[in-house]
Image (cartoon, rainbow, N blue to C red; front, side):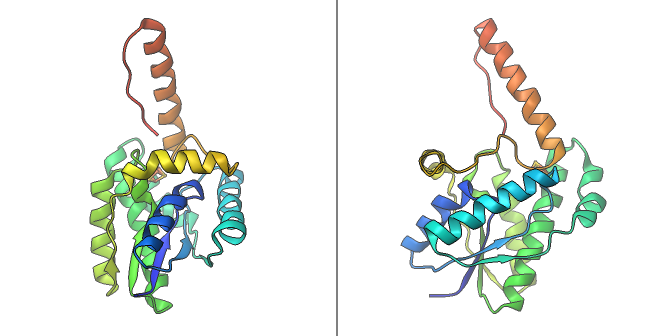
Length: 197
Ligand code: SF4
C-alpha cells in the first residue's frame, strides 16, 4: 500500500478519516500544519490534543510541519470576511505545506481530515488538494468523510477530547459567534435556523 501523509486539522476530525483509511489498507502518518489557528493558546491546545491522541490511542507518527503565521497573514487574512476566497487561500497554504513535506519525505499519497467536517468548503478543499498534489507529483486520496462526522463527534466526546466550536481563524471565531446568536434568536422566535461551524 502506498505511503499516505494525512494532513490533520485537529484531533477530533482525525478519528474517522484515520479509521476509514486504515480500513482501506493505508497506514497514515499525520501531518500538522495549521498556522490559521488563533489565538496561540488555542493553536497549542489543538496540537496537544492531536499529539496525545496520536501517541496514546492511535499509535501513529505525527510530523509537525511549518506553521508560517506571517505567510497566513500575508496571503489569507487580507480576504477578511470573504469566506470562499479566504478558505481557498487557507487550504492552499496548509495543503501546500503538507504536500511539500510529503514529497520531501517520500510519501506518494496525500489526504486531509478537513474532508470530515460539514462546515468546511468540501469542493474548494478538494480542488486545492488535487491541484497541489499534482504540482508535487503525489496522488490525492479524495474521500467524502462528511457522513462520518456524527461518529467523529460521538467518539471524540467519549475520549474526552477537547472540541473547538469554530474552524480556527479569528474570522471564523467571529462568524461562529454570530451564527450561534442567530440560532438562539431563531429558537426564541420559534423559527428554524441553520448552523455554521
Ligand atoms: S474558516 Fe477555517 S478554513 Fe476558512 S480561513 Fe478560517 S481557519 Fe481557514
